[in-house]
Structure formats: C-alpha cells, structure tokens
Length: 167
Image 1 (cartoon, rainbow, N blue to C red):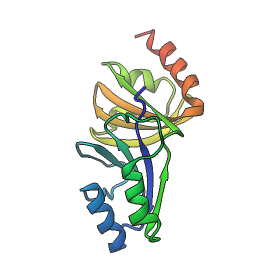
Image 2: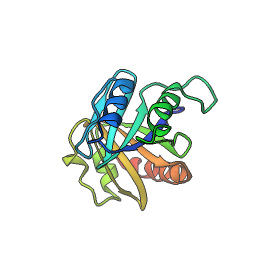
Image 3: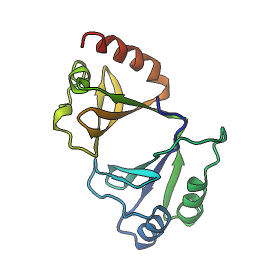
C-alpha cells in the first residue's frame, strides 16, 4: 500500500480559459483531455477520469499526519473559491496498492471483465475487480497501481493474496 499519498479530485470545464489557465499555472502542466490519459510530473500524476474530471495523485508520500496540503489549498483558492471548478480531497476515501511482478495481468484477469494487457503504459481505466470498483494505472507490464475505496481494501487485498499464491 502506498500511504500516505494525497489524492485530489478536480472538476471543471476544460474549455473555460480561467479554469485551464489557473490549473496549468498551479500544476505546471496542461490537463490531459483524453479519458484514461496519465501525465506525470516529478511531484504529481494527473489522470483524466472523465470529460471534465481529473484525479491528482502525489508521487511522494506525505510526511505530516494532517489532511492539510499546500496543493489542495492553492487549488481551492484559485479554482473552487472563484467558481471555476471544484477541488475535493479524497485522500482518505481511497488507498493505492502498488503491484509488481510478471503475472499481474493474469492474476487480475481471474476476476475482471477488463483486458489488462490492452491497457497502454501510463494510461488508466476504471473497471471491476472481484466485484470491487477500481481504477488501474499501468506504469509498465510489471508495475501497476490500483486505486480502491478504503472500505473495500482489506477484502480486495485478501483476494489478491489468495489469487497470487497460484502463480
């Protein structure tokens, strides 16, 4: 489990110049438009999860135990307060499993309708895994991250451990 890692949900109209400009200046990137695209920067990864929705994930663990993050505060001040969009901290709602190994796709395919082999590097998809909603981020063939709601994390982790024993 990658923890603690800040996770923010960002919503807004990509065609709104104030929204796009402010987010671009704050994050130092242009938001990806294609759903499933992942753009990485040294400190953050930004995933397009919908037509006007993005998931911002820190690439570093957070040292403080507080849920007070500079990036969240800056985005809130420049986006939410000015009604250009919405910023929501979802850090405590989701956990991230970082999985490595040569049989990841085979293990995950045991209980999912999704074809994990067709997912390109640095792309994401949302699907079901053993009846649990997940977001998968494929880094390469032997390295992926699974975002799962914290309330289902123990169940999914137990299933992953059981499934991996046969490989």
